[in-house]
Image (cartoon, rainbow, N blue to C red; front, top):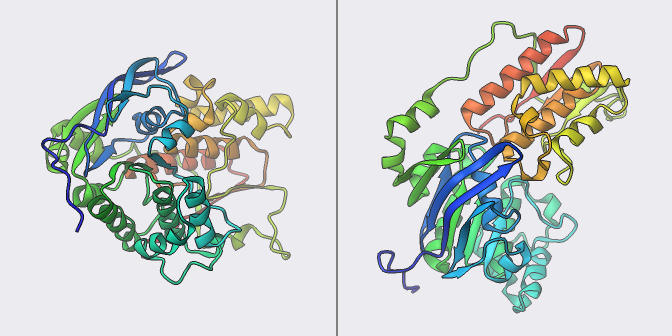
Length: 391
């Protein structure tokens, strides 16, 4: 039986001290402190755009802070490259599930084991632990969405990760499958003695599984403590309970159950349909401005500029982050950018496939309000939305 950490005596696995990160004139993080203790699940909560993903980028070396330090197991690792952080046992799960689609589940694990110098015959162990027994020969692309998430986490363990940074591990999952992911994460903490930090919008999941919660708002830590302490704080409650502003000027938005509504007889999407796929496609290495410019490149220059201006007006933060690389935006901000890019195209039909996937309820409501205003501004076009139904 694995001996549990003495949480009261052990030093932090990772400590962020006074982290500041600016993108031009915009301050994404304004001096954040964070402790990740051994044998605990630490949740980063807060509205979309609060700085959670930016902080994760800094913790695993994707971004370097303008001020502050990152301490891993007592050593200063500030700005260390992501691959070097991985060699030191830091595993990062991104919001978009990243597996090798054409390899089997076992081969995905074996690739990680080989990279970490471990025996390939351990693959079955990690699949069994993730609840994927009997799935080893199945190609990753044929696994269900929740199974691919479990496989991605297992692959981090096969890389010998001791600290897992999980960015919305249950995003876009129905409630029946959210518990499956978090039960696996809790089992890793208790049996494999790993430490976990995660970004999560699901308050019930945080209450059930997190030991410590850090609530971020506008780049600052508003409250840290247990889930009960954080979510009973009046400032936190106000942010979660405030409804998104309604807009009586919304146009007609049609909700559909499948993508067939925009496909032709051959099952293809016609060129006069602007289609936002549920992956929320953006060019991560390009700036926000460049993403928007590329989205409207087929339109006349004056028309493209006008459509871009209207799209940015629906998502004002895009204007102040124009020179920021899209890959460093939070998940909600990338989704807003992807929606704005779709709106920049000249089309007869605009189809948004699960635009609210993985978003906090308040942010999702604001996203739908923006789509409604877009529909009102374009009465001659059809605006369709497909949303996943919870089981």
